[in-house]
Image 1 (cartoon, one colour):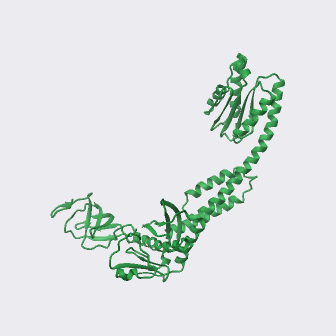
Image 2: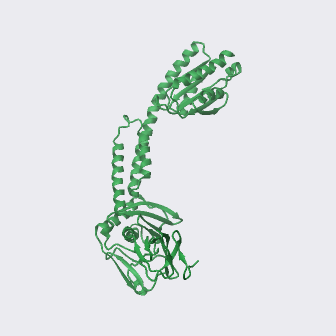
Image 3: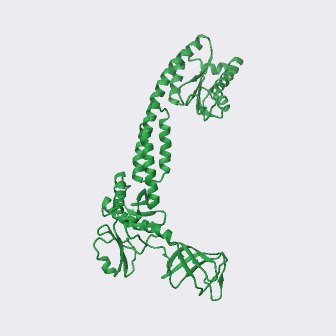
Length: 441
């Protein structure tokens, strides 16, 4: 509740102060409140973390610190964090310019639906039915950048509300109630005229740089743009240049000498998604990276197809030899990657040549990588009845030895292990199991 005469708020207390006058900007018009401190009588201070307007009064909220105390009637000294406000001002001014840019690019239907400006970024909500295209994002960003480069003056004037409403091209927030008289902020002669009580820069050049980092949906028919200015924007521009260079370097990689081109592109895409840079540039670079990734995947498919054809010829020869040697089972180390479709081709080839033979194939995704390994097995019904050998039990015994998992039926089973350092040990395990079952029978 309210402190009464004679009551004191001590250190650690969270309080709200109403002063006879204030240099703090209360949150309004989409601009975050000022932060700072209020020095107290007798030492200590109040760390201000919020400033709001209630019933025509400005309420300064904060925590009493440094052995301070405060009571009704105390004399205090306000110390606004002007360095922070200096970084808020360009973001607020650029929301006005962004509003004008969107009307230029999208047309008059993109009315403002809200905004927020602080010392880190600006956010602008507007009416629009669909996501902006990459070209629209680029044009909007360039409009604001051009306005900064033109060094247009930013001025303000307080005037009667009726006179302000009569200004050609003036913009006001839909549904907002404005005071009379009202403050009008103007950017250049023709760029922007808006009702606004916030803090602003004196010239657009003070914003230094502008980057539109994101455009998303917040509600049906409402879109949101997030952007940055000054040092943060300059850093984002540098990030964009860096990622454009990395993308170009990747595009020039020879797919025949870079077997992991798809993975390199995937890693770059992940880094790109996490980076803060121009949304338009990010969209363009994503498309280029995805094209490289597709090229890498297609090349792998062609390479794998050649490996599979070569492997099928070797399998046929090995199965024919095993059949000639009177073997009832065969385990082979294959080179078909972790391609389950290729494993079906191998199975069909084996069944065509030796329909009564049990077969297991083991194949590394990348030979010698110690990574993923594919394992599949078939057991003909005749051998199942004769020996009791089952493909799913055989597969489980083998994959359990390397932390893998699989499934299937007694006649046909398949699975994988995420890591396999010793494929030969897997082959030996498979041969040992099948020999024990078949010989014992």
